Image 1 (cartoon, rainbow, N blue to C red):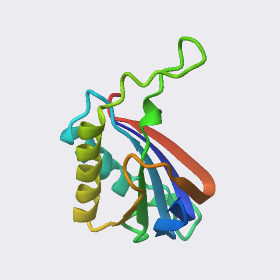
Image 2 (image 1 turned 45 degrees about the horizontal axis):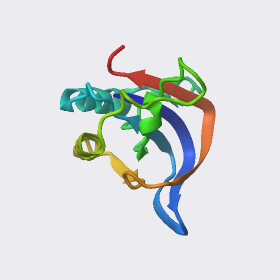
Image 3 (image 1 turned 180 degrees about the horizontal axis):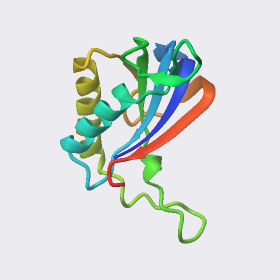
Image 4 (image 1 turned 135 degrees about the vertical axis):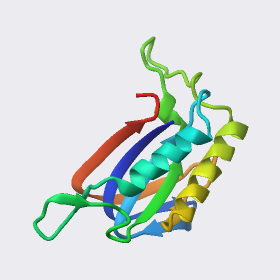
Length: 147
């Protein structure tokens, strides 16, 4: 499972003219699910993301977690995180999980985060979306459960 995290002061997801999710202080999670991913990968990522100390304390030092600042998550499924661009110019997505498995793990990830007490907003699985955000820092972190 792969996740690109972006610390934000605001973000939203729009589908057509409808805003499906909006957050203020928090993290946008672009979540890619691979063929070899399981619930244990989602458990690890949720625990890591919720506790990752990337928010500034009173001394402007990255020392606070999402939980500490009562931040929100905006979770967007993104199978393109499994793009393999080593051959040719057209990416291959052969390592991405099939939609049925990916959607199940996507929903599991969201449910686990909510059970940790985090406010979670989402995009819509398997839908073209527009993601707008203000990246603070900028802070962008890549997590991969296989590394």
